[in-house]
Amino acid sequence: MKKKIEKEKLTTILSDEKVFRKVIIEQNNIIVELLTQIAMSQRNSLADGFVVSMKSKYLKTMETLANEAIEETT
Image 1: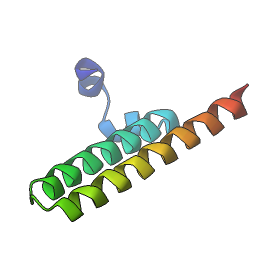
Image 2: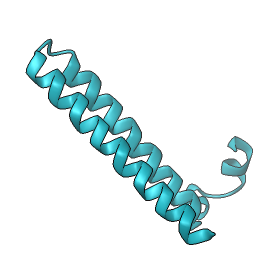
Image 3: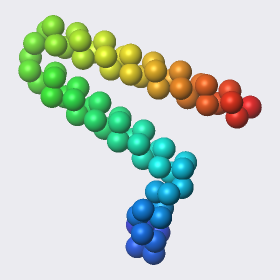
């Protein structure tokens, strides 16, 4: 991938819709993980419960979207 980036501009690579979607999904996952770590570091059991609940909701939503995408392609 590094060699490909060196040969092409990053914006050209990201212009591919599938690649761009993967990047956005990965960025969202990283943001969720970082926010989870920040919230969990506060050592507040109420916040911990909220974080676990929201992360679970996010993962279920991602799973639903993935299943819908798979069904559309079959």
